Amino acid sequence: MDLTQNHFELFGFPVTFDIDTQQLTERYRDLQRTLHPDRFANVGDRERRLSIQRTAQVNEAFQTLKSPLQRARYLLQLKGVSFDDERDTHLKPAFLMEQIELRETLAAIPQQDDALTALNDFVNDIRSRKQTMEARLQALLVKDDPDSLGEAKQTIQEMQFLARLQQEADETEEILVGDL
Image (cartoon, rainbow, N blue to C red; front, side, top):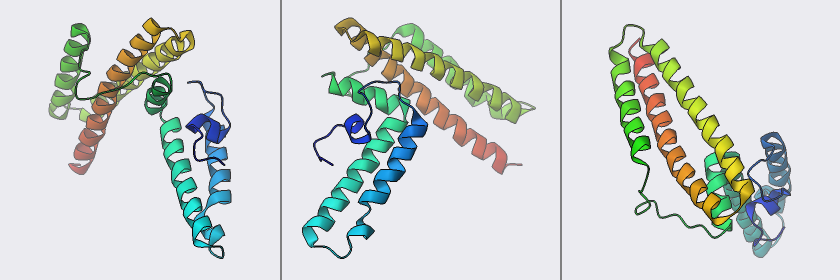
């Protein structure tokens, strides 16, 4: 295993958004069994350090590739598209308004009579939006032209908003369940 391999090469996958996550998990387990530092307990310091580095590389690659959002970001970075989360804040006004409305909806859920059902409906809506964005992202990444890559970057930024909203919904659920 070469420490300079990209995450896809490391797992033996083509550099593409559409990967089989079950195969990814199986390959991850195989690599972990092969590279785990415990297997190198009776060798020299250099081999042990390499094992630790390789294991860290496998862990990072797995975390990146298993998440559609992180996988897409990584793919764009491999294609030379950079991200500056502090400065890349130019999102479509309609999308931003939609986010405000979704946040207001989420904030109002705890006051509803059947808050858990309302939250479940909200989470299903977010999940559906994420799936739609992932499909759009996959189509844009296949095109692989500058306009499509720019649009893919915009889609990733929008997906990050939905991921944060999903996180807030999960936190709301913990509060609601804790109040029962």
